[in-house]
Each structure stands twice: as structure tokens, then as C-alpha cells.
Image (cartoon, rainbow, N blue to C red; front, side, top):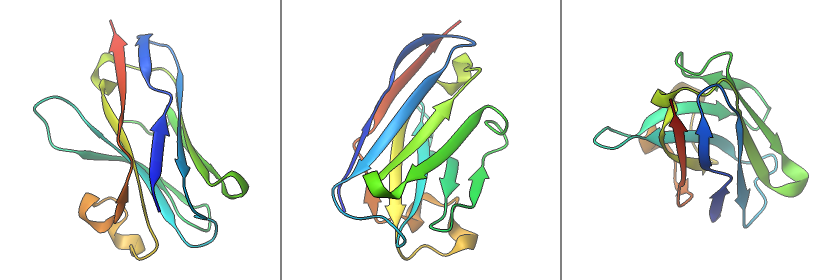
Length: 124
């Protein structure tokens, strides 16, 4: 499927943003979905994932501040980001795969489909 990420922008530290990732096809009960991010000069890193059974996983750096959710009827995954910090500044990418196994959810190479990325900038 093709993925389209949106919702990024500029926000002050402590603020909130909600990112959306809409799929061109049905992700429904087939796809595990995830968000990764990449800051300038750094590798792309895992942020959060939600399985097709709605189990969720988070990087330690965002646990308690970010929430991933999915609406299968709309083929959309959301990332609610609260209490944003300047270190959250990055391009955020959504990713999906029907084949990724649970032990590989945090690995970017496990995902087949990627969105184009949306910039999130948090000012101090």
C-alpha cells in the first residue's frame, strides 16, 4: 500500500501535534504499522508501533508522551504527540508491513511500505 503522512509543523516546547498516516489500500486486520523519525545527521529511529491486534509499543524516549492509534475503517494511523521537546525535532515517517514479526517491530528494515515523511520542529 502507499502511505501518506501529514500533520507536521512548528510547535513550541510543551506543545502538542497529531500526525496522521493514511493508506491507499486496506490496512485493516493485515498490517502492523509504525512511526519512525530521523533527525539531521542521525539514523532513522523507532518511535512507536501498533499491531493489527492493537497492541502498542513505544521507544523509551517517548513513552508517556506519545500515543499511537489506528482507525481501520479509515485506513489511518495516528500519532498524538504531547509535551513535545526540542529533541523530538525530526522528519517523521510512517511505515507498514503485513509480514513483520513482533520481535522485529522496532527495526526499520522489517517494514516494506513507507510514507514520504512529515517535518516536526519543536522550538525551545
